[in-house]
Image (cartoon, rainbow, N blue to C red; front, side, top):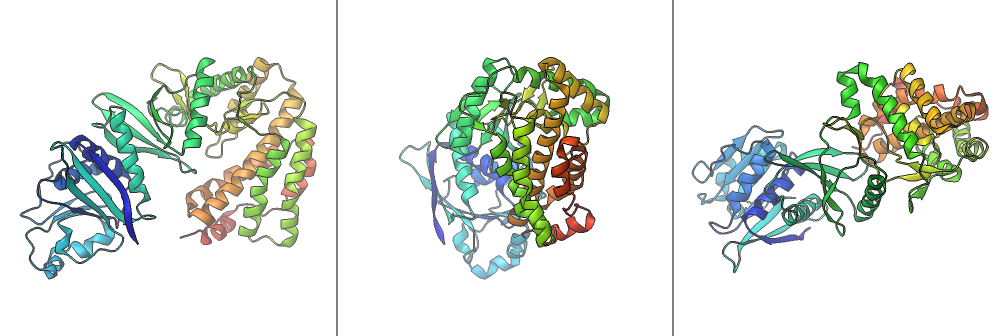
Length: 476
């Protein structure tokens, strides 16, 4: 059922910012109805949105007043219609617009000249007592168009931060609801972080803590803590993963530097207020594997029973192998895609809002036993050696703890990947399962993990047949 979703009041700059903010969120089948009198800003909005969607600020976007329809070759294509000159609803059929709408983004001015469109977003453009301002009222299905409301909040935030005139492009998203957009204004760029308010507060707290200790994190340009938006320094696109992909010979040096960075991070007491990731919590989290993977892989009752024993075994082993060392700050989601090589050759850190108080090996496991990529064995061993040299930890104890945390982390990832497919329809993560499983098998070679190995060897491996079986259950 259509409902009032958002009201924006502001100048032409805000209208442009709203169109640019909404553009990356549109997809095939989205229809936006632009209602309002002549000169209210409908064409201005459509022009800004089309240019943003095409990532072409200079794109010629003529008004379709006389041609009735203008089309643009985007992904998906864009249809911009002006129905002002139509006198009969039946004439819409002749335009081809109705046939195109399921596979296109449609912007329709003067929509009262056609039959109602199901699940469309209606934007009403109204005049304002200030002649330089306009009022935009959005109406549509609250679930379908929740992204539109968020785009409006991003536009208001960008204007308040002085970036309303910036071009907007989608930068990244992840398995959470957090997203990032790049704002470009001339030669200047910034990153807009879109999250929930609690995540943003944790991110800002860790930004302060890390920067005070000399770690390279993005400078904070502006924030709206209440709605979970922040404008951050742009470190660029040189993720360590990309650097190594194009220059594999740099892997040894870069992972050596990363190990030294983690050793320095481990020299500080844990950051205040972060969550505790200890043995009981690790056992709870690894329960996600037993909850999702065996059943989806077609395992029977006996295998499920063995899977249910994994978490208690990890809790016992953590007490034996890990509890002797004081905890440190772990950035948790620490891997080669969240580390940037800045233009001046610094290691810039990203995505540390989920930092925890945990064992010193945790982040080293995360970056060296990466679910998305294979690290050469000699690079891995050199990085571990550097970390142990810098921290002075006992080699045998550390390697046993490293193996245990690797098993825990990667089993949990197997559970997460399964759940993302079954519940959220994100099947692309299944392709990483064979590599993650191979990491688990390597980690289980540690003689201290014999008990755990006996349980895990009963699990069905993620071979092609198993992955196909899980994929067939993926939510559509």
